[in-house]
Length: 471
Image (cartoon, rainbow, N blue to C red; front, side, top):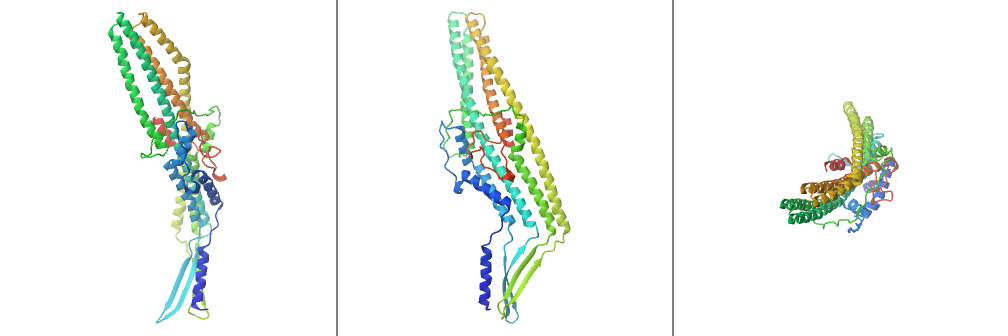
């Protein structure tokens, strides 16, 4: 066989190897199927889909869908997850074959030996590496879900705060109208000599204070509009989004005794940490596989001899560094214990968040009930009695304005209670059900559906919870 033919066969072998594909693991198949399912809604053809047109009549679901598809941090988490899926293929694949070339040279070239070699990691190493990559991919998936929920919460928080801001402005303006009427009463009483000009001045002072409060509230609308704009993923160069006219409350039945268990079951934070534990377990397996030697086999052919001289080549690694293997195993065991501790800590944190938000919800509900059914009606009646008493000269203007200010405090407290109740209810719905009210993506209310071994819903992330507590 001529040297040209030898080189031709070697080139053909390398060409065939270049078209080879590995065998995907079951976890890899599930991850890619999940990836395709999510991509159909989130990034079809790897492009951002058409965003819903937002108007003042758009539903909360439209705003949520816009944010899910447009928010950069959701997109970043999505592509981080996509990259982790690709790493599964990389982890379970054999090392690239190697082209080898050897020459024997004395006074002349006595042999020319092209060839190729394939390396095979020790038994079980690729499977363990693929298991690590699969578990890490699952963790990235649940981080993506957490980013979805964080965005959901940010949109809903700004949405509710804007709505209740308008209520506060309305209450203050109604109180201004009431003060204007009281000023007219004081002027009328002053004109007939029943009271001094001091009553008129007190009414004007209170009006000036309330006008400042209204101006401050209207100015704070700009900040909340900026928060909504940011939550929707709109940059400073984009126009401000329209503010919705309608109001859609959160619907959640808190009577169930299984709500905390649901929060534990559906939390993507817990699912991500469970995946970290599985990754640590797979790392321990891989470390133990370090005792297995790696094997390389190859074939070389001397193109200058006739007949052609073939030289099989084989290499075997010698895993003699036992301390290194022991250290790798110990590292994996320590990482597993750390992941298990973080998982336990997160379970405690979720139980605490559930308890705290439940208390806030019940407290706000009780305050709302007593304000709406008792305090506000009675204080309204008290104000009418004070007005009549002032006209009859039975009480002074100070008592009349005190009744007005008490009514204002109760009215604003009622708005605050409704806002606290709605925000607590929103967080509890995300925490316990793992779904987004008015969910924009997916028929089940979830942005995507996980494969069987990583099925999970999504609760309120801790970062958003702490942010709400600050407010």
